Image: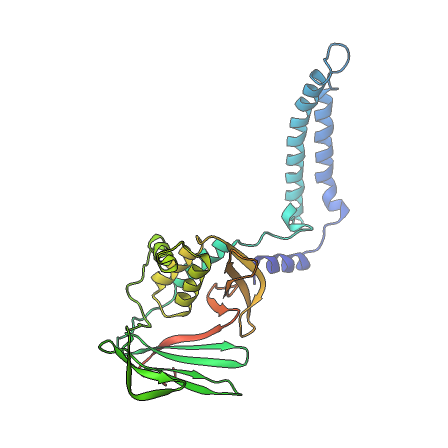
Length: 315
């Protein structure tokens, strides 16, 4: 239960005070104001007071203690209300909305949540298994931890299920693929693409520099390119320290904003974070509003990420 729900429950279960309950506090407040007016006396006016000077000073001298008494009186009313079980709401709780957390705060909470997650470093010969959904279609992927073993991608689209090989890169060569088939006796040049990176930064400053280098290359830094790199890393298997650094660095990317009323591709509601220098939403990461874990994006819901021993094996 969140704070607003708690306040609502307390309000419903607590009876309102009667007029007799509030009379003593109200009388004390009015008596204090009346006594102050009697001591302060009328404001300075007449021929000895220059227009807009003495008269104004007199009103200012009187208004300060009266304001103090009003504040004190309201505090007295608050205490009286507390004694009778009444919940007193502040200005932001009456006739308005409590300000929502901003984008940087949400990412900071996501970083803190990441550090509480357990972590097991995979072996080089294992695979990172990911299961995601976009609408009615689920996608499973088995990616080689070190990038040298043959992986697999499987689409469970009920209308057009498919399975695609992902050849590993060994000695600078990988099997050639055409469509969903490996071309016999044909290889292509390659570089291993590890599914798990133990060398990624675990510090927010270093992570931000890493994202900038990847996004800029030899040209200017591109906000949307940085956001896409954040998305790719966040949806993969990384250490808790790397994930926390990633979210903290992401909070410092220009163009960050909260996207309200957002759902991931599986329809799960959450809070969205976006980076864009254009009119469209750009990359939108969707976080669980309660525990701040990543649900996925508006285009791809992250359902499972774990380690398995072979391609095709499910957890």
